[in-house]
Length: 67
Image (cartoon, rainbow, N blue to C red):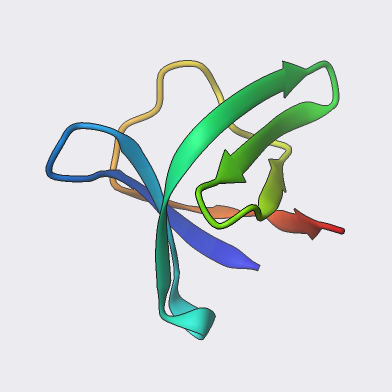
């Protein structure tokens, strides 16, 4: 699914999912050799394969929701 990463008003990383009209703050980030997993405040875990350390925000990425 396509999601947009951006900084919210407090400067924290947040994820916006347009198809769900959902915006949640990122509460945890785990970097693995095969990608990055972001945990959102609502409990969702999204896996990104092309998320680097220093990215320019806001930007749209392809993510996969983990079960």
